Length: 147
Image (tube, rainbow, N blue to C red):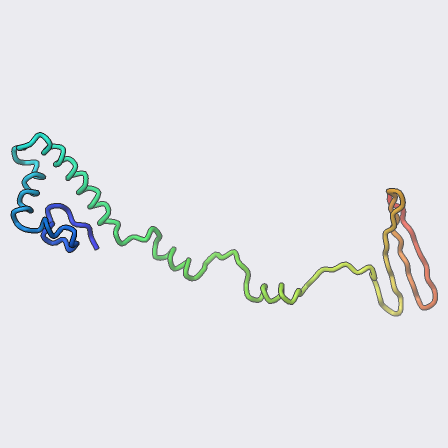
């Protein structure tokens, strides 16, 4: 709905202006705001200036009244959730089921009845990496000291 200017009071549908709609009152308002005639009161020039400024604001508002601040294509992109940074439903399912998980298992190998285990020991700030290989009843160890 457009905002009406003071010279269009007769067509204003807002009930707050009912007392200004009769012809005599509209005529007085029009006369006061008319800057092409002689000013009867000293304040008429100020009223005329303010009326013109108000008309500029009303024109600006009425020109932009149907704008939403974004273009139609932007609104469509928002609706379609274009360029989203979220995750897909497949990704959400994989997170839930914990697919492709990376976990640590000290049993590095378990093939052909050969087990390879790695452990780290610490003694007074010195670390040792110990590899234990078991094949049947035979167990072998190798240690690497880390300094």
